[in-house]
Image 1 (cartoon, rainbow, N blue to C red):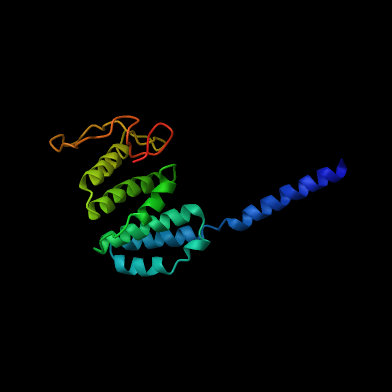
Image 2 (cartoon, one colour):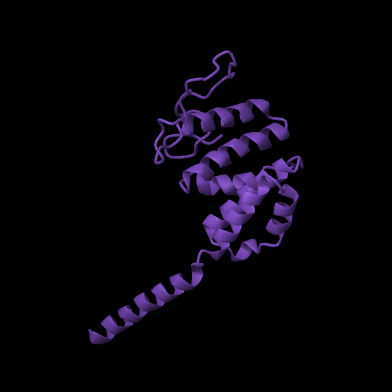
Length: 178
C-alpha cells in the first residue's frame, strides 16, 4: 500500500514539473504585446518581427495571439488576405474565451478577411456580431448571441441574418457552425 502511495505521489510530482516546463514566463506574450503596439504605425516592421517568432514553441494562447496579430498587420500593411486559415486559427481559441479585446478584434478581422475573400454578407455578419458583443452594456463574460442584434444604423439591412440555433457565427452547443 505504501509503495502505491509513493508511486502515485511521484506521478503527481512529475506531472506538476512537466506542466511547469511547458508554461512560459510570459516573455513571449510581452513580446507579442510590444509587436501589437507597433502594428498601427509600422505594420511592415511588425510583420518582420512576427515572422521571426517560432510559433511551434508558443503556448496555445500566444499562438492564437500571434495569428491574430499577423492578420491585423497584413490588413494594416494593405496586403490582401488569400486565405482565412490564420484568422480561423485565432478564432478557434478566442471563440471560447481569452481577453475580451482580442475576442472582439478576432470577430472584426474575421469580417475583414471574409470581405477581402469576396464574401461581403458573411463579413457584415461578423462586423455586426462584433458590434453587438462590444457594446458597453455587454459583459466581459458574455457569449456572442446568434440572435439579430439591434442595429445602430437600421437603414443597412443584413440579408438572411441567422436566427437562433441556425447557421450562427458562434460555435457552441446552442449554435450550429457556419
